[in-house]
Image (cartoon, rainbow, N blue to C red):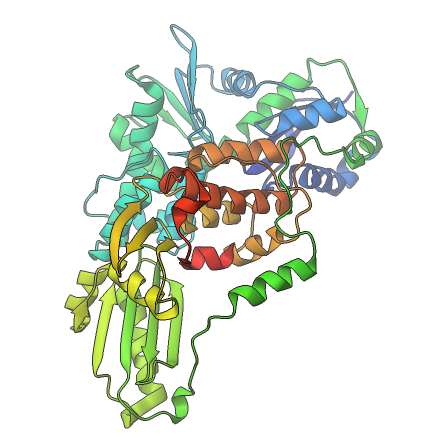
Length: 541
């Protein structure tokens, strides 16, 4: 007799189900792999030593990242849809339709009538990754977002095709003071609409529907939205306890049909074997040595703004505020343009409260020793801040950029700024802004683009950027939109690229996107002779 083991290595998580001789589940697990697919699979198997040592078992693997492991180590592979359908038919034979949401995958299986499977292609809109992005934008855990969604009073229209467009919808709502509970429910509504319009594509969703995948199991608010929009009864909507493990369960059932029998030591030895990288189209390193990197830093640190101790200062300073799409920046200058105080932070969905905190802090540091004689605000939240705090002047972002750039380089003729969701490029001619180029709907190559990838791999943006510096083999990832870049990154991971190589590849992609997609430069000389770069994204990369 033997056990049956099914492993589902998805885009973001690793799931395992172990069945005994009676097809009873004796062990199951669900964990994020942070793109360390092979390492996590091996570590998980090692953790099962007490259960599997001395036992014989059959094994099958599935999932978007499982195929590479199967090919490299000779482990039987089962296609994901086949695995899902097999488990559903065995456990819930009355099912008409399967809706499954994973980390970056979304599927609908029509099991009755004309059997058909619909799946998202390269777009991760309306999946777990999309919800993760939105929770991050609201500065909360996904569990908190789910909880507050039940308190909603209204639903706002939010694009779910892609996190890029959704952020563009959500950020103005935050700046206008919309309740986070309403935004949370609206995000779920967008996911439901994406599933119906993007996947079903006109084919009716009716009858008995089973909902699978981690997001549809853990997020009760999302469950509620699906049931309400699809108008399903309690009998028609099935949310099984094993929803996150269903694909792995189907893989375990499939394992029973295979011939090869494994033991614990054999699998551990297989997974312990190092496979050579197969990544093609490698780029040159960003820096070939530490000396080259140090030279780069020194060159870019020549222009600095002097600082002054605020604790000893008395006078009449000037206050500048940038309320951006994803961050808030505050600078306090003295009469001689020395920085007395500066602050940078994610806006966390509530820029007003953050700015109020900073004003209080400045007051605590200075007391009656200072009198702010003038204040200016720019950015997405310009009007909001003017109304909330009575800021003296509101200034257009481009003018603010040019004013700062001219201060450091009077001959500046080209400025590029990479922010949270936008890229701005403008030519300067005869001391005035001559032309402006902005990215349009897509935020590929912006700060949020980098942040999304960093978080998906388990790093802060700063730590992720540092990984790129001494990468020996940066991956060629192109300069496409975020949606397609996800596919490029996943493929590079499957081919053996390290985190360092992906980070370096993305850094180069940001530059390519700005030059070739936004500016559309034919030649490097199109940019000008005196170039000033701005934006914290460019500091990180």
